[in-house]
Image (cartoon, rainbow, N blue to C red):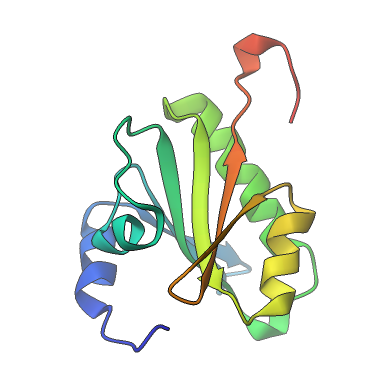
Length: 137
């Protein structure tokens, strides 16, 4: 269970340009962190990624006033497009609190595969299909 205290990890992700903000009409509507390397938390939840073939999605958050408007789905679509164009990775992995049914369902509805639970967190991954494979998402 998250206890807070992730400030140093958040600041480090910002400094590494891995944290993104989504703006609409000059208003912050969402944020997320996308890391090409595992954090200590990722290793704790997923185990060591020996082949380093994953992007790790953290702290996807949409402003409450903007929820249920498709912004989260649009962000996930953008992440896949970005990963396809800019990264050499095969999967996106993420975790979320296991007891958050709505969030877990959101990831399933957006094509993520449930991998089980670790430390009260659901684990998910999604295969990134490369454009040069001539397949679509």
